[in-house]
Length: 518
Image (cartoon, rainbow, N blue to C red; front, top):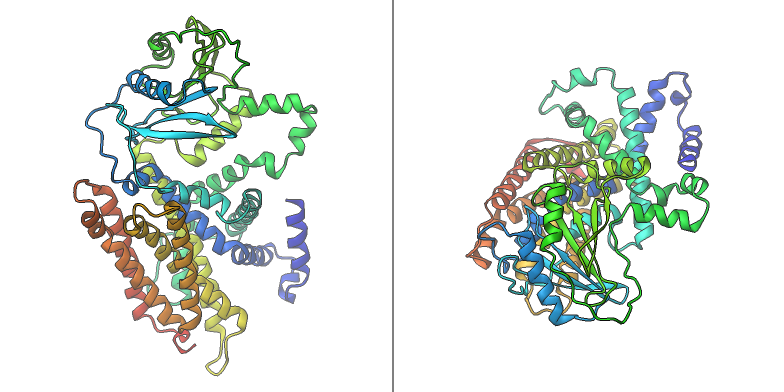
């Protein structure tokens, strides 16, 4: 952050003379403009993919239509017992088993076992124990991880880039509040067909609509990765590796297997453990069961509480002796630092949210996406309107216009192409999930090439209409490739987004601007 502020101060000294005024608002206007244009394209992608991520579980279900909807609510104890029976056959001597139970939004349980530095897992029906063999796909998780790591970048570099852009977003929000003296009054003002004025009105409206959310989501996104961005406070307070390891352990629900004794012992029935968890947390709150060293006297069982009904994601769990079922530890509290971090994390991800709250997250996050998009377009419209009839646009303006097309309309096409690829790529294809993602980036790259080769206005129209068609035909594709399952809310959402893109295309078709002459 100090380096960022130094960079901004350095750039500010090089600006035009009107920014050398003692007035605060012109300086904030400059800061708002350049913070937005430097990070706008990445922020748009982060907001849009982050918005979709609030329904990533449902999206993954759509992308694995082989897994049927559940006919009844599964019992957590019974589901865990089925998973343990499966693991007893597959990996009886493994150091650790993990059973992931389906939540209210899931229809699949997962049985996992340790394999090297990671885990192998199989999906199964939580009611019958039948093993599923769904198509290979990254599902909705791709959008979730992309929105803060950018996928192809090395993990740390991608998170540094998104963190830098989030910092610029925070600067843009604060400077925007200073610039707009009548921002709340302007929220109720919108003038169609007024060029720059219309884009500014739209930018103001989308900004004010979700202002508290935008501040929250940007700040909490930075706090979630604070130990990577700014580790110095932690390192000053926790001076030894052991203290830092203890903090990390407090932030995660992990069970490290003890060294096996070599003495075989039957794992005690876990029904008693689930009864204790239901008594302590209330029925239906267990999200995960972890069993270390099954079949040995050193066996331990950890039942981890889910996040439903509580904002903080700081871990709650109960630890049992696997040989006799005695409670060894109950963790329901965390330090102030970890609790604060857990609340920030929970607010950002919205895992505590019920269906209505999740839809509110989604809608307001889309408003943030539109806020960034209108800001990017406003930058180009303002500079276009300053040109005389005979003047040619500067290369920088032309570049921003093309990038806007590929980032805004092109990203919609690429994300929809990812869903089309899920249904159309051969099921037996090697590295199928990777090729779904490759398709996303290939299509996105093609939209940039198309934007560079076509006149600006024509490129906008063609890409918006293509996005409209792909979204509108998604429900048709769903029924043709999967006639047995019903995804009503997915179909309604796709059609709604198609209408939104179509309306934008119609409005742009009716708009006369000089970009058509480029």
